[in-house]
Image 1 (cartoon, rainbow, N blue to C red):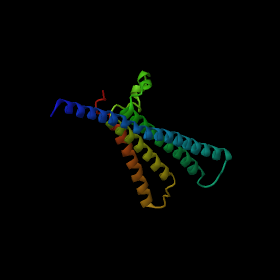
Image 2: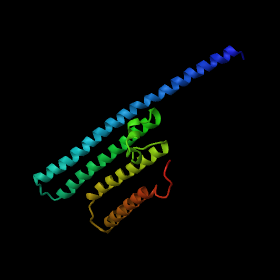
Image 3: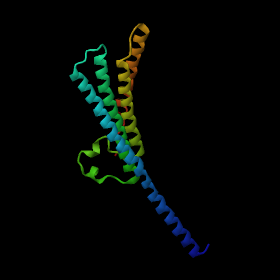
Image 4: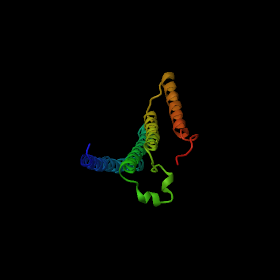
Length: 182
């Protein structure tokens, strides 16, 4: 192969690689949408808890009042957790595919939290932890209104509590015995 042909192929390869590198910027779309979704879920969670507070101040005395109020508060917390998962996802995608966030690196406390994402495995682990906690909260909300009428329903309730405790233990204990990422 001639030297000019090799040079031409090399230029085309470099152009393609530059285009390929710039194409990663399409990942800004899921970053923006997940951050917008974070704001939406935080707003919805705040509205849910606010509605519960307003109902409490109105002083209703219906039969399931306390369970209903507690369900609203737990729903708000669940929405906050989903928002946190969306925030972690958006932040992680930006950090991994687009660019490290310099402002986060300058803050002395930023390197120790949920948003310190250096690789895809860390992103996955953090998302799984938050999502499992959100599922635990959702299951807790469902258990608030679970009617216990006989021995079987009590046994299912107890089994549910045991499974929630086990999942909480597994999520909390997952990273304890592993060396920290460097």
